[in-house]
Figure 1 (tube, helix red, strand yellow):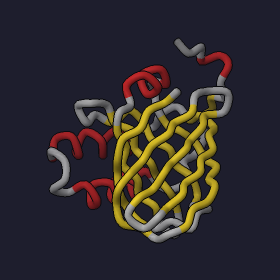
Figure 2 (tube, rainbow, N blue to C red):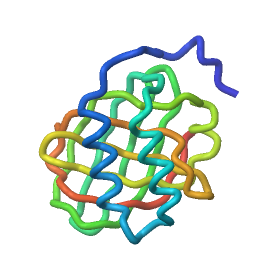
Figure 3 (cartoon, one colour):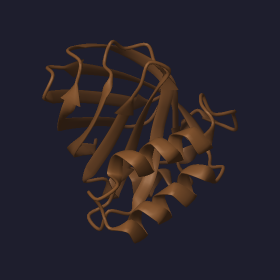
Length: 154
């Protein structure tokens, strides 16, 4: 069990408008996920939540990406994804947004990413495709694309 008192918890402005993130998510997931789950995730992405300082790295090999995201003084996520994107990679600094950090850590089984020229957003899901939280940063990597896969926190 994680003790939240040891993490860097903060209330901050998001890197990019929640409306843009929600729109890009809905567009990329249209037809790939149950519409009710998409709608619930869109609503959650638009709703303010607690921000936890985090950093990440990604390595992209066009059809495969490997992700690492670490919450400051918290746990680390490792994930492997398929998708279509540019080759490359890089580091990212931003925030993980969630109102249940322990639920995020304990229940994440899959993720979806949107990497644009302006921002990177990684959405974390449980086994029933419910959004648990997301990581957002300015676009500091060379990856541009969308995809998803499996991963977990430890």
